[in-house]
Image 1: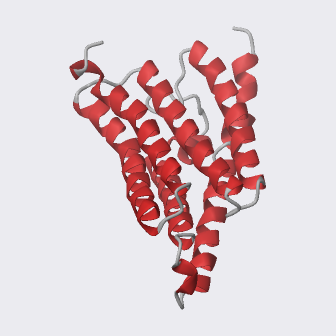
Image 2: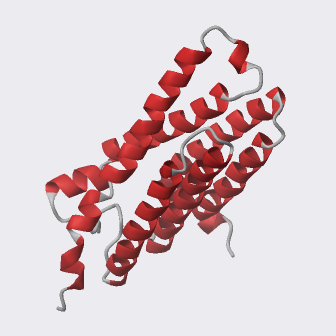
Length: 205
């Protein structure tokens, strides 16, 4: 593989390993391991934007890159939601919703890809203005990413050993749960146009 011509894809894949390293540190249950997990989580999510920037800068955009980007998103997102539920920080309903949404939307997007469409970009599968805004617009993608990364970072911060002794721990928990709910609502809302516009993909030409 030519590394120079695949740097964006390498970043997409690498961030999964960065996220897994962060998740592993959560099981050490020390203040320092949680601090490092917090930093690595921030890096993993910043890499999500970096791969797209590099793809555009070095003209490495492709259908394969789009698939890798979404694949990386799914692995990282589902892994964090699942581990947070296993650790008892959130209800199991959150990862279940995320997993169900991922299967449904990615199944539909695989059909769209076979017909020459992509999730984002000029060849987006969304045909309606509302669908394009919710699913493919930079504003919604960035808003969802911010809600998600803040939810994950705040969950780590709020559950860091010793944090329960802090006077503002209760307020931090409330703020954390607001972002957790915001992130999962974003997750569901952004799936709606994919589902509602999908019937046209199954109409024979």
